[in-house]
Image (cartoon, rainbow, N blue to C red):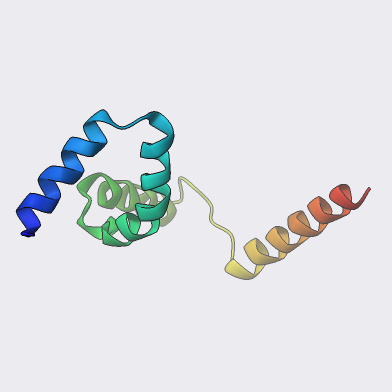
Length: 86
């Protein structure tokens, strides 16, 4: 069967499939579909990153060192684990 035929059959099936089946198909393909997306090819993403860098560079926003970020993240996760244990 040709790829074009397969695509048509899949498209037709998805158009008429029940919600649960569509969700199941998506779950199977989700990781693969996300791997195809390149953030750096997305103009909105690039504009957002440029805007954030400008804010850091001009002092509008004060960043924190990565070590501090990771320490706070570890503390937050430890606190969550303790709450779950109670």
